[in-house]
Amino acid sequence: VYSIGQKIGYLVFAFQNALENVFQPHAYKQMFDDPQRGQKELGEYLTPFFYVATGFALLLTMFSKEVINFLLSKSYVDVTDIVIIFSAYYVVLFFAKIASYQLIYLKKTYITSALMLGTYFTNIGLNLFFIKWWGSNGAALATLGTGILSTGLVFMIAQHYYGIQWPRGKITVIFLVFFMANTIAWILAHSPVPAVESLIIKTAIIVLYICLGLKFSLITSFMALRRGEA
Image (cartoon, rainbow, N blue to C red; front, side):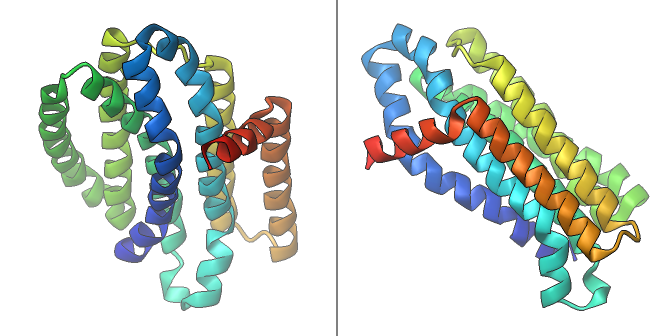
């Protein structure tokens, strides 16, 4: 159950890596060619990519139950929980990716090595307790908890040395909508809501997320940036 859920959730990370091939060269170019301008503009530049990456995770989260029920037997019903947790984990890791760019620019990669070691032992510690309490879900939650702690720490350190001006309002709203959707997906996965009503609720959440992207001009910005990079 854990292995299947982890592999499905990994699709979010794979999608992020595909997006990274687009934004990484530009991010490094701004950092090294004009550091001050990079601090001012990189946040707005990267936000549409974060929105699209989170949108992919949202789709996976919303409809993982239907896909799993179609492909697997009822004994794998708990896979949905693992997918939801790992999707959230990889969304959080987006900012760890960007923080690694900042530390590479600053030639402080030793910080990353130290954090990796700390992350390793934190994950072991959380697993010891969470698996005992919640089984395979606990293992996934331990990974999510470790990801949140390590990403938050490396993000704060990177921002201290090279402060990117992120549009905090947009980022906060994207996070809130995503984690609200994750919560609703989990509730629907464990409630007797009929399939039709469940699909209506999930579709409404997807529409809300698209409207959010239109309101903040994130969809049009992403399309323009993608064409520019191509």
